Amino acid sequence: MSDGALSQDEIDALLAGVDSSALGSPSAASAAVSGGSEDERRAMQGFLSGTVDAQSSNLSMMTGKDVSFRGPNVVAMTRDDLLGMLPDMVTAVKADFNSGFPGEHGFIFPEETAKAIASLMNKEENITLDEMAMSVLGEVVSQIVGSQITALTDKTGNKSISSISPEAANVPKAVAALPGGTFMCATYQLTLGDGRSHQVWEVYGPQVSSDISRALGGASSPPPSAGQSFAGMDMGAMPGLGAAPNMGMQGMGAMPGMMPQNMAMGMPMNAASVQPVQFSSLIPQPTAQEQGNIGLIMDVFMEMTVELGRTRKLIKEILGMGEGTIIELDKLAGEPVDILVNHKLIAKGEVVVIDENFGVRVTEIVSPMERMNDMG
Image (cartoon, rainbow, N blue to C red; front, side):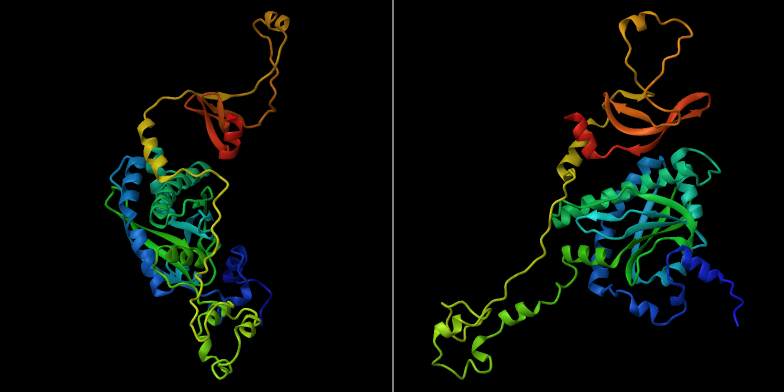
């Protein structure tokens, strides 16, 4: 008889948002949404394999080291399958797609791999996975996902693909947010110039991988609806119709959903090609051409200003200022400061001190829509 205490597995399941009653249940996996056909796996394998060279180049530029990003090996698996491969502590980076192919997507780094990447990026030894390190790993994943979106746009013609800003967290593996059911998992081999090989996992939710592989032409289309199947039948072969050759066309036209009035009896009708409507994103997305052209101005200097606050004074008050005068600003203590580029607000941050110098840690990036409104 149980003493009422929760087991470690039950605690981990509760933290991860999993129903503890499903632990150890052989039907738990079969009850989840299924997916992961071989065609789908091959399509994802082919697409991701074509992006690794660009990823290696991007990571090498970001870290200043000869970074190699190789693979991947794409396999359909469940949450339990992946948890069995992960170390106890991982850094999970959530990077869901929010348009184009919306759904779950993210990366899993072993804790030691996350520390190694953050150390290279920050040029700092024995780094701890604090908020700053999480921000660095989020930027790394942002670069990787950006390259993937560019490649997907080129291959599928879908220009509405975008993802959320990556959110990184260092957590026990059981707490890592993973898709339900059977999903696609890509395993990469990462070397950071130190001779060691690190494993990195990328996961795609069932719906995301299905939509992407179908757009790439690597998965069969959904089965036709009942209406489509009926429309493709030979009307002359239908029971009761072929046996009534004297039936008038007016009678045929009176049968809802069967045939147009001007179509001959017995002529097979071609099924209409029905596809889901794709709506473009309301948020402006750079095209592949724009992303290529921006490289021409990468070495242009721009003025960056950090604004602590503002106030308005009468001329007589300004003329009356002297040493020791206190000027009250329009911001409260602890409120984020504004970061401006060429006098346009692009981000907010908090003031920090670095080796006796002031600095600013970015805490929020102003959305593209807000920046467009500010420019207007």
